[in-house]
Amino acid sequence: MDIINQFLPSILSQVLPWLLFAAALVLMLKLIYWARQRKSAVIALGILIQMFLPDPNVEKTIKHVLACKQQIRKKTDENSEPITDN
Image (tube, rainbow, N blue to C red; front, side):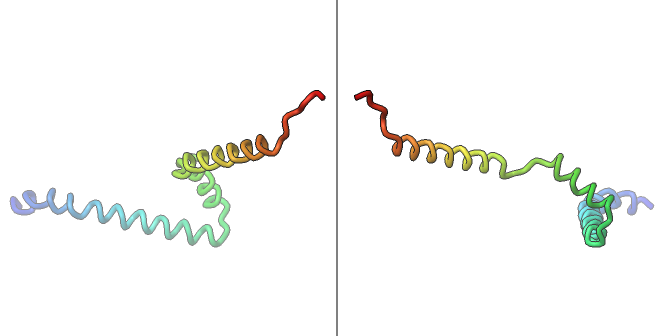
């Protein structure tokens, strides 16, 4: 019994991450299967997850939009002729 108690924590610490990964994988596969069958609860869960998880490309998209707006402003400023009172 002493041998089992001695090695059990080290075995669990090595196996537990893989068990959690396998459980997450099975859960994701099951959710995909339900979503393909158009289960409304899974689709609602997907929408909620999408709402609360951060989008990694938000900052990149904001910078791109601002750069495009600046280019448009420069073009309109170059194309507009100054008004003269002759």
